[in-house]
Image (tube, rainbow, N blue to C red; front, top):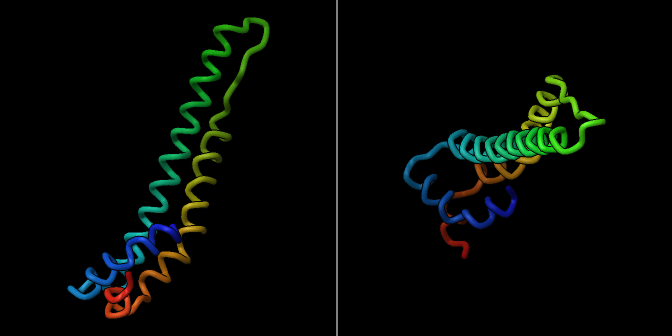
Length: 105
C-alpha cells in the first residue's frame, strides 16, 4: 500500500483539489487494502480446499479434513493484515497537502 500511495500521489492531489475530504482518501485506500487481502485470503482457502479434494481422490489411505473455524480464521487474519498494514499509508495519503501532491513527480 505504501508503494500504491507513493505512485498515486498526483491522483490524490487532484482528488483533494476538487473537493475530496481526508476521510474519503483514507476510506479509498483502506477499502483497497482490505479488498486485496480479503480476495487473497479467499483465493488461498479456495486453492487449499481444491488441493485437499484432489489429494483425497489420489491418496485413499489418508484424508484431509478442513474445519470451518480454520477457514474463517484464515480469511479474518488476512483481512486484519489489510487493515493493519493499510491504515498508515492511507492516513499519510489523506494528510497530503494538495499543492505539494500535485507538484511532485
